[in-house]
Length: 125
Image (cartoon, rainbow, N blue to C red):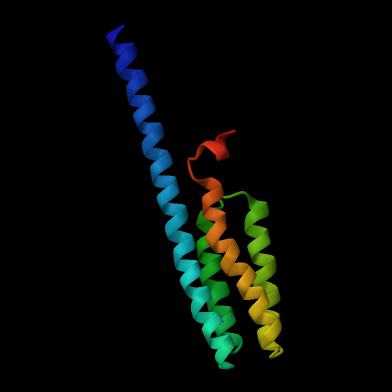
């Protein structure tokens, strides 16, 4: 009986540790992506953004998403891909006002998406 209690408590503690690690990891990945988006947004506002700036953020996102596929559903990652591709296309064609709108959406998504995967009561039920 004592072994059963120890095994159960160990399993519970391992699950809690996994949840905490997942929440920390997803938040840190999106924090890095948000910082890159903020930099790109500033460059677009100044009219100094070019194709390479957009591709640098896309490259960063591709690196992040390869690891986030474990924790975040593919549809959510595709959503970010879609908006980022549109923004890069608008930067390339120098339509900065439209690119700002796309980057603004991406900033909001990067801010809110990690909250959807935190251990909260509303996410469980």
